[in-house]
Length: 151
Image: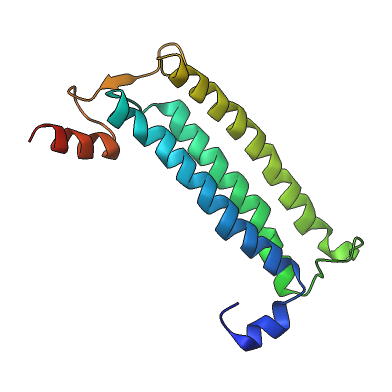
Protein backbone atom coordinates (compact mmCIF):
# COMPACT_ATOMS: atom_id res chain seq x y z
CA UNK A 1 0.00 0.00 0.00
CA UNK A 2 1.14 3.55 -0.53
CA UNK A 3 0.29 4.74 2.97
CA UNK A 4 1.96 3.31 6.06
CA UNK A 5 -1.12 3.81 8.22
CA UNK A 6 -3.37 2.02 5.71
CA UNK A 7 -0.81 -0.72 5.34
CA UNK A 8 -0.92 -1.43 9.07
CA UNK A 9 -4.72 -1.53 9.12
CA UNK A 10 -5.37 -3.46 5.90
CA UNK A 11 -2.25 -5.64 5.70
CA UNK A 12 -3.77 -9.03 6.53
CA UNK A 13 -7.29 -8.51 5.18
CA UNK A 14 -9.27 -9.35 2.06
CA UNK A 15 -8.63 -5.81 0.86
CA UNK A 16 -5.09 -6.77 -0.12
CA UNK A 17 -6.30 -9.85 -2.00
CA UNK A 18 -9.00 -7.87 -3.82
CA UNK A 19 -6.64 -5.04 -4.66
CA UNK A 20 -3.98 -7.41 -5.96
CA UNK A 21 -6.42 -9.31 -8.17
CA UNK A 22 -8.13 -6.16 -9.41
CA UNK A 23 -4.96 -4.35 -10.38
CA UNK A 24 -2.83 -7.19 -11.74
CA UNK A 25 -5.27 -9.77 -13.04
CA UNK A 26 -7.87 -7.47 -14.51
CA UNK A 27 -5.25 -5.16 -15.95
CA UNK A 28 -3.80 -8.08 -17.88
CA UNK A 29 -7.18 -9.54 -18.89
CA UNK A 30 -8.66 -6.26 -20.10
CA UNK A 31 -5.43 -5.50 -21.95
CA UNK A 32 -5.61 -8.86 -23.72
CA UNK A 33 -9.21 -8.30 -24.75
CA UNK A 34 -8.45 -4.81 -26.03
CA UNK A 35 -5.68 -6.32 -28.15
CA UNK A 36 -7.94 -9.16 -29.24
CA UNK A 37 -10.69 -6.87 -30.47
CA UNK A 38 -8.34 -4.18 -31.81
CA UNK A 39 -5.60 -6.14 -33.56
CA UNK A 40 -7.75 -7.78 -36.25
CA UNK A 41 -8.37 -4.31 -37.67
CA UNK A 42 -4.65 -3.74 -37.97
CA UNK A 43 -3.67 -7.20 -39.14
CA UNK A 44 -6.58 -8.44 -41.24
CA UNK A 45 -8.54 -5.33 -42.16
CA UNK A 46 -11.68 -6.39 -40.31
CA UNK A 47 -12.91 -5.71 -36.82
CA UNK A 48 -15.37 -7.28 -34.45
CA UNK A 49 -17.68 -4.47 -33.51
CA UNK A 50 -20.94 -6.17 -32.76
CA UNK A 51 -23.24 -6.83 -29.87
CA UNK A 52 -21.48 -10.03 -28.86
CA UNK A 53 -18.16 -8.29 -28.22
CA UNK A 54 -19.91 -5.52 -26.30
CA UNK A 55 -21.89 -8.07 -24.27
CA UNK A 56 -18.68 -9.95 -23.48
CA UNK A 57 -17.01 -6.78 -22.23
CA UNK A 58 -20.06 -5.87 -20.14
CA UNK A 59 -20.27 -9.34 -18.56
CA UNK A 60 -16.55 -9.30 -17.77
CA UNK A 61 -16.76 -5.86 -16.17
CA UNK A 62 -19.92 -6.65 -14.19
CA UNK A 63 -18.52 -9.97 -12.98
CA UNK A 64 -15.24 -8.41 -11.90
CA UNK A 65 -17.02 -5.63 -10.02
CA UNK A 66 -19.34 -8.12 -8.30
CA UNK A 67 -16.45 -10.32 -7.24
CA UNK A 68 -13.88 -7.77 -6.13
CA UNK A 69 -16.18 -5.03 -4.80
CA UNK A 70 -17.44 -7.11 -1.86
CA UNK A 71 -13.89 -8.33 -1.23
CA UNK A 72 -12.72 -4.73 -0.86
CA UNK A 73 -15.62 -4.02 1.51
CA UNK A 74 -14.86 -7.13 3.57
CA UNK A 75 -11.23 -6.10 3.86
CA UNK A 76 -12.14 -2.61 5.05
CA UNK A 77 -14.32 -4.05 7.84
CA UNK A 78 -11.48 -6.35 8.88
CA UNK A 79 -12.12 -9.82 7.46
CA UNK A 80 -8.82 -11.68 7.63
CA UNK A 81 -7.51 -13.29 4.48
CA UNK A 82 -5.86 -16.27 6.17
CA UNK A 83 -8.74 -17.60 8.24
CA UNK A 84 -10.88 -20.21 6.44
CA UNK A 85 -13.93 -19.50 8.62
CA UNK A 86 -15.83 -16.24 8.70
CA UNK A 87 -18.57 -14.68 10.76
CA UNK A 88 -22.14 -15.03 9.52
CA UNK A 89 -22.41 -11.28 9.16
CA UNK A 90 -20.05 -11.51 6.14
CA UNK A 91 -22.18 -14.12 4.33
CA UNK A 92 -24.14 -11.69 2.08
CA UNK A 93 -20.90 -10.16 0.81
CA UNK A 94 -19.44 -13.57 0.06
CA UNK A 95 -22.64 -14.65 -1.70
CA UNK A 96 -22.56 -11.47 -3.80
CA UNK A 97 -18.98 -12.22 -4.75
CA UNK A 98 -19.96 -15.75 -5.70
CA UNK A 99 -22.74 -14.35 -7.86
CA UNK A 100 -20.11 -12.44 -9.81
CA UNK A 101 -18.62 -15.71 -11.03
CA UNK A 102 -21.91 -16.42 -12.77
CA UNK A 103 -21.20 -13.36 -14.92
CA UNK A 104 -17.63 -14.42 -15.67
CA UNK A 105 -18.50 -17.88 -16.98
CA UNK A 106 -20.71 -16.66 -19.87
CA UNK A 107 -18.16 -13.93 -20.54
CA UNK A 108 -15.38 -16.49 -20.90
CA UNK A 109 -17.49 -18.77 -23.11
CA UNK A 110 -18.50 -15.84 -25.28
CA UNK A 111 -14.89 -14.72 -25.59
CA UNK A 112 -13.82 -18.21 -26.65
CA UNK A 113 -16.60 -18.30 -29.23
CA UNK A 114 -15.57 -14.92 -30.63
CA UNK A 115 -11.89 -15.91 -30.69
CA UNK A 116 -12.64 -19.16 -32.50
CA UNK A 117 -14.56 -17.21 -35.12
CA UNK A 118 -11.70 -14.76 -35.58
CA UNK A 119 -9.22 -17.61 -35.96
CA UNK A 120 -11.38 -19.09 -38.72
CA UNK A 121 -11.60 -15.77 -40.53
CA UNK A 122 -15.12 -14.89 -39.49
CA UNK A 123 -16.56 -12.86 -36.69
CA UNK A 124 -17.48 -15.68 -34.35
CA UNK A 125 -21.24 -15.57 -34.96
CA UNK A 126 -23.40 -15.89 -38.04
CA UNK A 127 -24.87 -12.56 -38.89
CA UNK A 128 -22.32 -10.64 -36.83
CA UNK A 129 -20.79 -7.55 -38.29
CA UNK A 130 -17.24 -7.90 -39.55
CA UNK A 131 -16.41 -4.69 -41.31
CA UNK A 132 -13.72 -3.94 -43.80
CA UNK A 133 -11.58 -1.10 -42.54
CA UNK A 134 -12.15 0.91 -45.71
CA UNK A 135 -15.91 0.67 -45.10
CA UNK A 136 -17.82 2.90 -42.71
CA UNK A 137 -15.85 2.79 -39.43
CA UNK A 138 -17.92 2.29 -36.28
CA UNK A 139 -15.34 1.49 -33.59
CA UNK A 140 -12.60 3.71 -32.20
CA UNK A 141 -9.87 1.27 -33.25
CA UNK A 142 -11.19 1.39 -36.79
CA UNK A 143 -11.10 5.19 -36.77
CA UNK A 144 -7.43 5.17 -35.78
CA UNK A 145 -6.51 2.59 -38.39
CA UNK A 146 -8.61 4.33 -41.04
CA UNK A 147 -6.84 7.63 -40.44
CA UNK A 148 -3.38 6.06 -40.62
CA UNK A 149 -4.13 3.99 -43.70
CA UNK A 150 -5.41 6.94 -45.78
CA UNK A 151 -2.25 9.01 -45.48
